Image (cartoon, rainbow, N blue to C red; front, side):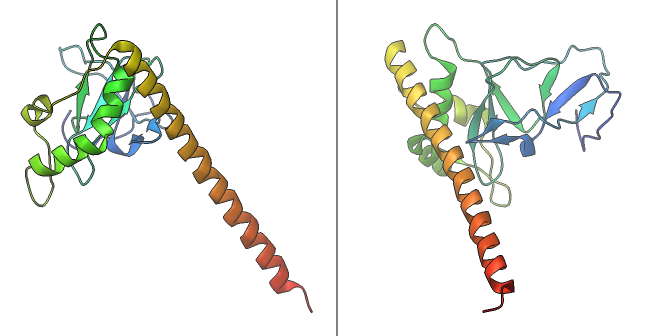
Length: 176
């Protein structure tokens, strides 16, 4: 898959692109473009528990695939990370990839000036702390709760702004 991805409503494979991922919201499966499968090689389909790592641009981050997927692939802008779940929980690893410590590491190791990028080797060399699975589960749960809190806070702020805007608009139309 090279070049621009054109949406084909008759396509049989969905494609996750950079615009479909966010470090807070994860992978947004709504409105994924579809393509028709071509070639002899079987595509690498994403699975629940995979982590999509954005390896180029101004932000490097992981996005956890938290739902089962049907015939979905990732655009070439991602590294697909599959955790060895006997040693490390994918949700914990996703948190670690997005942690401040990892972000500092990426900023020190990113290559390129116009379009910074992280190489596979750089990502492989990231030192990852691996506590017990119980502690990983706890950290992942706290991280998931903090992301949910952030999402709800942003939604609350949007509604507050809408309410204030509506009240001020009404007040400006009312005579004295």
